[in-house]
Image 1: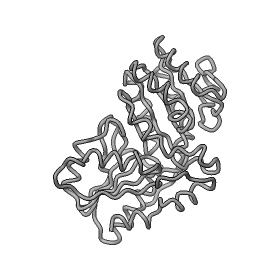
Image 2: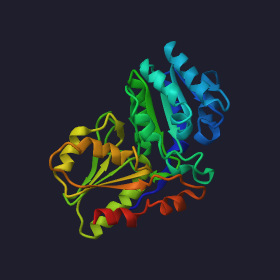
Image 3: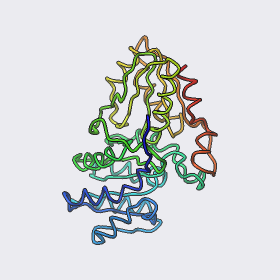
Length: 307
């Protein structure tokens, strides 16, 4: 399957500008990374609704909570690690109060590349999904990113949107994002189910094609809603296919694979689950693609698990 690639974080500013046209009570908060996250595009058009806190992420999240309390719709946009790790306590407090705080995290997993382990967000799913009363959306293409922002605005409560810096297929969405619903993107058989999160979309699609070429016919599943997760679909898959493979630009501890395992573990008979992702290690500095290859996010590795 031929397609072009695009980094979703390059669309964040434009998506927020479009959302502002319908929702003029949006405010965007930044912690000195607006150029990298493209939130600067929003700042250029709506400076009166843009708040720059400097390198003070906890203050930014606290300010977002205050804006939400006053009826605004705050979007705190930053690298995923600095939202989920640096601000974890503030996020937990906002979720405890069910505040209408929205967060967009860019540079998931090893997408930080040369910035190394201090900037790689291999734990963001694990850190966020453990907190009650939060919605986690994980778009895999441009349409889903724009849709995720509208979906977040419609939700009265905290929402975290994971947004890749790495490239994803520039393809139209198969359907709209719906919290609690996954999408079977391709359904060729029951040999396997390959389940992916947004930043591994390209890898998952290439791996699926490779599997088909090896006469392995399965299902390709887009988990665009991490929390709530599509429990019914995952449990049905576990009783239908011969094996399940998850692929994630994230630690295999607490991430997508763990989420699937927790969802199907109490079914008496289910397909075995194989997880492709970062082992329990700190990753290092280097080109994003080379890092993903070193830590096992390759077609060959995914295909080996499918086979």
